[in-house]
Image (cartoon, rainbow, N blue to C red; front, side, top):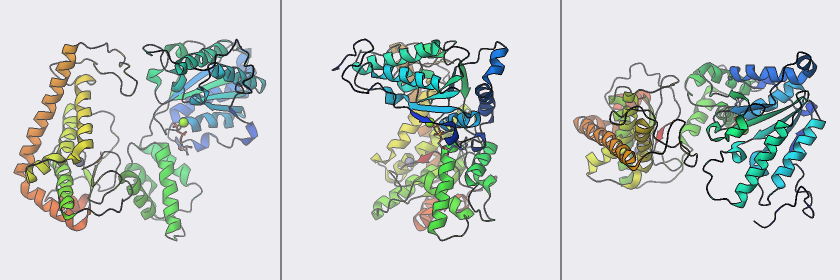
Length: 491
Ligand code: ADP
Ligand code: MG
Ligand code: ZN
């Protein structure tokens, strides 16, 4: 750390302290609630804020204290930033936005000065909205932040300044601070106290109806061909959020232009979807040997998926290299899933093991190709034991730190003893060992089906659901054959 600020004065540091926030005047915001779809509960909750910003007098006359801080939390791409802009657009309020990561500078004190400046400007422009995006970048919990570094100091001072400013709000001021975060669980509890971000709005991933509405919003200004079935696209995209769907619509329009279509066709959508989900083909040539190994590997995933009750239906199998993967097996649920049983998760582990076990069964040796499969299944097994209480030995206890939160424990979880750690490892190993034995038995017993699926795959390179089930001599009952999302397996 080179500089320390002297009191509030920034001396010769120029205008570092000036807020870098972008101010957008009310007239310029064209985003309204009509642009936000599929997250009706969140919109509902925010409409009160809009109302307050529009007619603060009404609330003040009744003596109500409007919340000054509203925290939007939810997965990336669900529309938090969009929603914040829409609130400003609806309320005709000035909109000041800044990403919390921009506050963080090497020079201690600058962040705090920016915050002061930002709040001063916003109060002047009231009614107004201060939008602090990526709030977790400064607002992460101070508990356990080991080792004081300059960056930490700066973060703390910035955070303290935000808290001070929020505490200093006069209830008559029509200024609302909207914060957004993908990770509300790691926020400093001080931020969530009454008078600060005490209103919290969950922004959920959309369900099927929600996805349809989002698709409608993003195709509003596109000429669509008669073949386009937005409902069908919504049905086959569980897990996708607003940003994914917006991207899909855009890709489809680009593809239609490239193909010289006069309207956007269904095929433009389905081909774009395939590219988004599976990745763009990489255009490398595999040796005959690698190609065959990849075909067995992917057939192993696919066949285990077809033979295991509770596994998601197989949608597509391909040995065209894409991204990091030499091949892909895509299996997705028929509908949105909100919870999984132990059997469902075991089925997922089995399917993830299918690729490697197929190589073992056929070649008697293993390669490095199953790395991401192993990561995936290890993670499922660990969470079954330490997060979802699915191990009889350890019982229903939360034992794992939250992922990605820098070692913060799940609410309710305490530091585990070494003995418990050891038991977790044992249980994870047992789950995976059992699955390995079962999958080995399965693929050995169904070797002929593995062979015929592999031959078809080598010939066709990509099989959709119907062809894959036929090639494996399986019934495709109740499968729609539509493409789905998530869980691409790498060889
Ligand atoms: P977040 O801030 O939650 O990560 P964004 O608001 O930045 O997500 O979303 C990125 C883009 O995705 C938006 O600009 C919009 O085009 C689209 N989008 C996301 N969610 C929605 C939604 N609920 N309705 C319509 N479009 C959405
Ligand atoms: Mg955002
Ligand atoms: Zn694999």
